[in-house]
Image 1 (cartoon, helix red, strand yellow):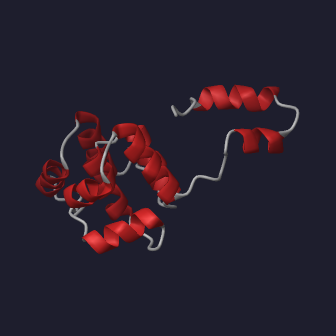
Image 2 (cartoon, helix red, strand yellow):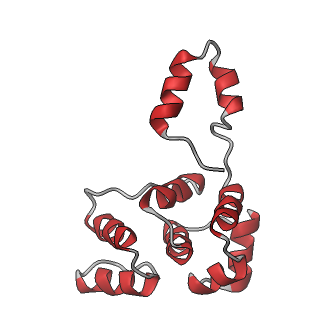
Image 3 (cartoon, one colour):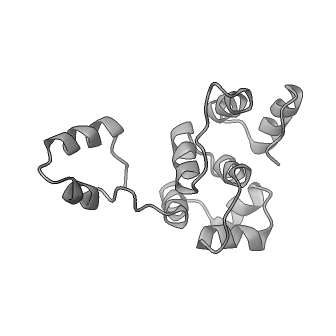
Length: 139
């Protein structure tokens, strides 16, 4: 299911007579990390085990993240984002679902990561770019 644009949701909210009904109808604030990860797998036709492998995350730990049994650091979430080939918007939604800060272009390290996501760089290439600029790598 394609997610509506923020502007579309805002317009619907402003036209709504009941904010609670709007929130329930649009599933606002109810997306968990495991739910969003599964949604992305389904939308992109990806396999969890392959994503975990590409993300260079321990198989057991990766499974626990997908099942909601373990919390993941911001960098682990970014590893999954790169392994899934996410857009910047999808990566930020994933970070948000995990309770982590979204990528922020005024932060030097985040700016490099944003650039790499936008260019479709692999996780390894992104780590190389971060290293080249003297920033902490993701992995």
